[in-house]
Image (cartoon, rainbow, N blue to C red):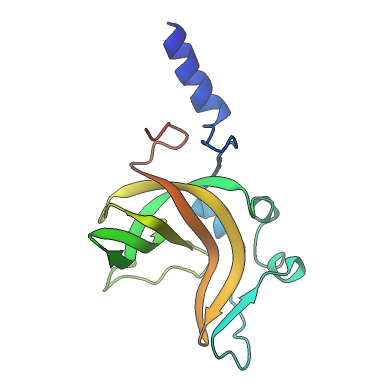
Length: 167
């Protein structure tokens, strides 16, 4: 009975990461709740980062902006961008699977650019949960939009069981 109570407490109070911080659960309804049509910066040759608060406050909800630099957990679907040694090292996390080759491009604020240093297993058209520190920044690379939300993946698990321990 004691183990059941501890498991319920973990679900209700949030999961504690190895570095001691609780993961805040974020969903795509929050991330994409404001209209966002980024303005292309002029004369960008390599990488351009807009991370000033005043600019971001126009497009990012306050509760999401408050999580910048904090550990979060987000569930969605993986669209691989880079594979190294049979592991996915970069991917977009999106709310659904409609962004396939014949699908609909999601809004710029309805996807999270994720990187994993050690790589993660590919879960094609299956729900996953990722955990890591969220970075809110508008990034352009060689004049093309890259991302508004970035996450360095610490953990990845199969399924939508938010708040459940991944190990």
